[in-house]
Length: 168
Ligand SMILES: [Zn+2]
Ligand SMILES: [Zn+2]
Image (cartoon, rainbow, N blue to C red; front, side, top):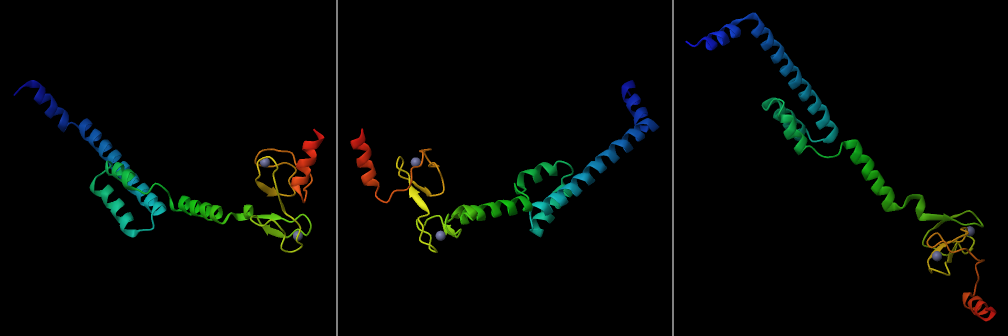
């Protein structure tokens, strides 16, 4: 028998080797256990499906340590909380929230952004920009779309335009 095999055999039966083995095994075991605990918690945060949670845990029991890679691939990209906030954000955006209404400068009634006149006191709540033709709340001093400076809202814009032309 070659001497190096004898050396290996000696090492394998030596107390040093069994200590290394125990340390390595407990390290492995601890890592495995923490991965299973982490996967359990993570899968609960990410999915309310019991089947998915069980599946995630089983993968990590069946495939020690490497199972976590598999889990990272199949897990939902968002946690339940993230999804909740995202849905909330979408809801607010869809409804428009406060952005949907403007305040009437006369009676302080909240008026729908689409309205031009206050339904309560019939004040004109919106005016059209003379430069870019977009309409915006009357209380603004400049057009929020093109930055055109506001002039007092006129009832007959055509007359004013004519005046301006003749002045020049
Ligand atoms: Zn009003
Ligand atoms: Zn404008």
